[in-house]
Image (cartoon, rainbow, N blue to C red; front, side):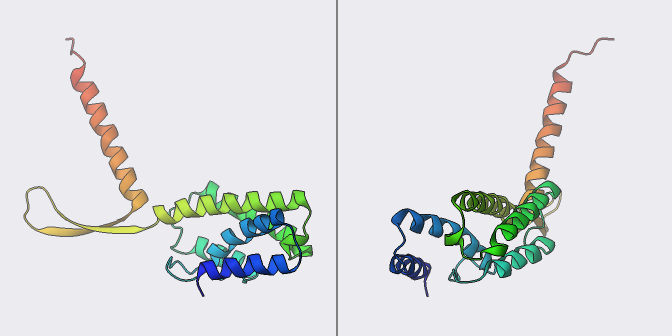
Length: 175
């Protein structure tokens, strides 16, 4: 089943229950980001919006301890863990997001957005990219596999070293 079919099914089921259009969008906004966490790291796989929150939260925790988010900082890891705990507390007594109070829905949505933002960036930074490069003075190419974050860090450090060397050369030497 495609994502569009799942979304249409969600909207249809909420219409059938007689909920207003505004609530439909709130529910869709709440369920869509959670459904992306159910995906097993393959973006072409259909998203299952009917998975319970606890299973999705457990999958996020498993991925945080694995290689999927290897480049996530300790602060961001803690932010995600805290947001998951807040969401679980909200959903503990009432697993149906439609029945939550308006303030709780807003808190739930904000925590989901925080998690989505942090994990999306961490997943992109944790992606391993391999390049075949020839070292200086050699015609032999070697494979160099680094994460996107490691490559960015090397590029930034090289730029800083270059800037520092240029500053040193531009200063007149007084003897």
